[in-house]
Image 1: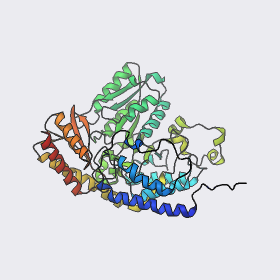
Image 2 (image 1 turned 180 degrees about the horizontal axis):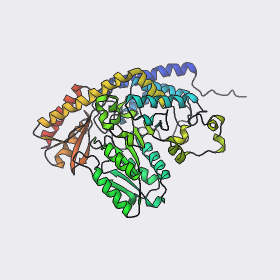
Image 3 (image 1 turned 60 degrees about the vertical axis):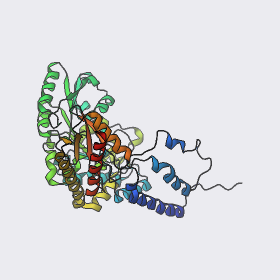
Image 4 (image 1 turned 30 degrees about the horizontal axis):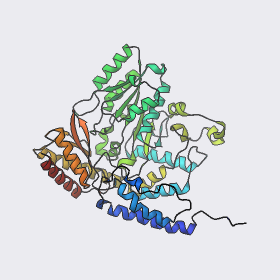
Length: 471
């Protein structure tokens, strides 16, 4: 009989290639600034380099690693470049990478406390740490009725908050009305659709001059809907909108939500991390009035995607909305009522050991180290904003509260688009745009772990040069 072939990588091979893989990652991060920030490939170019059929026999890991450089890297937009100023920061760090690696090596399935107690209890402990680190309201701490959980993204947090609010409401689903601002993330609209709420019952509330939601406009809309026989059930506010970093007035919105018994969800997304610095905790003023809150360590807290911390004041409402108990999940620990089963706090059943990398990051950097990066990025953004204000050809569209600068050339939208296209085609930096006040606006998001003042200076020089060529 033919001897069975061992297809597994041996422990020795795993160690050897593991070391070489870490070397590859370290070398990539050391030279990432040398690559064009925005990938310059054409559609279909990467797939054209790949074989039409999968290999019949396994290939050497050496060949696989070489193809990273030949095929994959040219097709990457380099989010870890210090010259990446688009969208939002997507920071990683060495301890986060190592935490993710160990999580993958453990292969833990953390759906129940019983399936890995350490996975659940570390998560509870780390999200409780963050309540203290960010100065969040005590009702989000697990010692009371509330608590936190790590979701994959703010989009999922928005959705589970919607579902909990829907279940808490007593009216027919066709009568339920949700509210958010015209500047809120598209995840709210998507969540409404998934939750079975008619898009006709989603109200986009006007904003003020700083692009924050208007409490007066919100209240008028709520009153009108109640008078029409509808039931307001959900308000989605934002601490740091994607387009302009606007901070909604949580305290005023919370008072309205409390008056009309409406669920208030606050999305801290990127900006929530700023509250690790006491001087920026004003962004959360009134957060104690919120039913739920989320922010993303995978944006500005040195933790690689995916890692979004979601908190509720009353976890029983979330569990009521999401808990299903099939026979195959029943176990003594769950039935004792003494443990948390996080599968009841999210959409999917399965869940990864996400808290491990966040634990590594917090322990490695400490509060002091994380504060350093936030303060540095905010200071760089404020300095860049001063340069814009001092240049007669450019204008600030809105005063930057934190690390996102929204600005534009004084000329037409066409000139601003030409500037953006020129900059991104150069590969030397990457910016994105939005529309504010019906005008095309350039966004300078400063938050990459390795971004320094020299990168901001170079970017400003390139922006002014592109403007001179576009006029």
